[in-house]
Length: 387
Figure: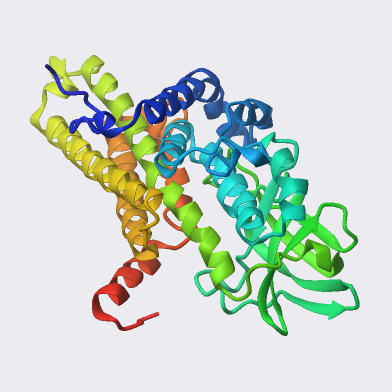
């Protein structure tokens, strides 16, 4: 039997029947609804909000959270496969789902009160309420402890001041999960759209994640009731715990982008004739594509084991860092190589490679740069913090 070109080690056979069904459902959605429109959306700098209802109907928002909150209750591997198939369409679509699920719904579930869970999670799962995650600040980047946004207690309320930067979904969001310094350490707040003093400003002129909304958030004496504070966590472990959840999905997503690029190039190089033979018949092209397949296979094996560890409650943040580092680097290298194999045609968004390559410039940067994840592994190896 011939090997599947995008699954040389038959990783699919390691999946359960339910996991395969999830992958097939999301793959069909990506093929039928995302891929036909995403090139134009990227060109226009437009997030295809018309897809949100369908994404919600498929159970992709907060998919790992319990059914009692209107969520699908899927396991970690299924969530990973969702991210992989969505990013095969575009990183912006996967980013929307990641932020809603891992950075907004997860902290409400993990750190919120039961009242907060009941109020927000069902509507978020249904796509009726969109969230964003306010951690990164203009000066902060990889150093979230250097947070300037602050909240001071005033009777039964908190008063927030500060700003956040590079916030996915910011101008779409009905609520923002905002992390701020308080006298008791860093705490999280559910800030609602329309609260006096709260403003979002969309960031323009992007060359990456153009089919995604990216914003700056501003807080000018925003009064938030204590009932909107996440009561069950204090300190950096709160936002970092959210980032671990989101980074886990990101370890899967770039595999989809890499597969999309390889798929395109396999077809293109078989059809394009140079020097009286298909480009695919040359040794240089075959070596390049074989290298892509090798790296995709290694990434696939990495994330399946990571997912099994997560489902067993054994996953460690350093393991997520290793996979995020490896798989983002794998995907961006493949996207760039595929752009080259497409020749001059590869610079247009009629082909996927340049769009994925540009998107992956953000993916390899956000939620921990490559350098940060390398240093996480270095610290794990040596026991010495070199940050």
